[in-house]
Length: 212
Image 1 (cartoon, rainbow, N blue to C red):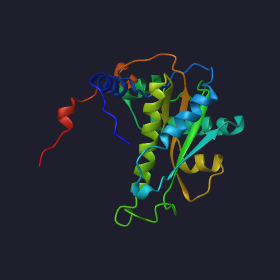
Image 2: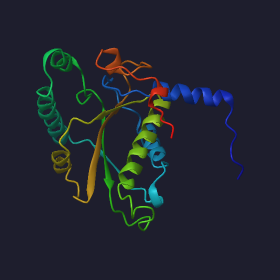
Image 3: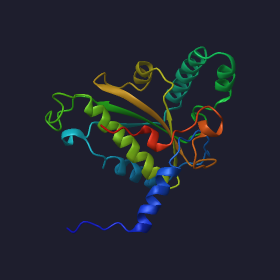
């Protein structure tokens, strides 16, 4: 099979995709069609993985009781996080919307099988954490594919991972990595919401490069 040639127009569109891939916290409540969501998850599984181990595990969370427990987990952890700030930072933090748990029609938890039989350990002897990195690559692949379909994704990181695993009745062999809110965005932007809300600013890319 001949490898495809990616045109300048495609590369320009790809740059736009990277720019418009944002962490979404404001969602419409109408669901993403099942065929689209399934296709996005299939695309996520095209991500690279150490030793071809494919250690990612996507768990769709549909049960209302489990979603309610995740919301409580977030509320508790978010309140604790607020106590770590003071003065203007605390006031600003309290105004931020940091999760789309109430409106997003789809909730997907992502776990990593940190020692999968698949791949037979190749590449993991000196750096076993590469299974986790591989699973994060799958999350990013899912995120980009979703953005290309007009679907938004928000990563909820303000959660207690052990409590989340218990809520979802997941085997202790799987490590909790992410809880994703998925749906059509209520608004779209090409800059991070935290930047728009004055919490932080992005650095120029060149400030993040180091030569040795």
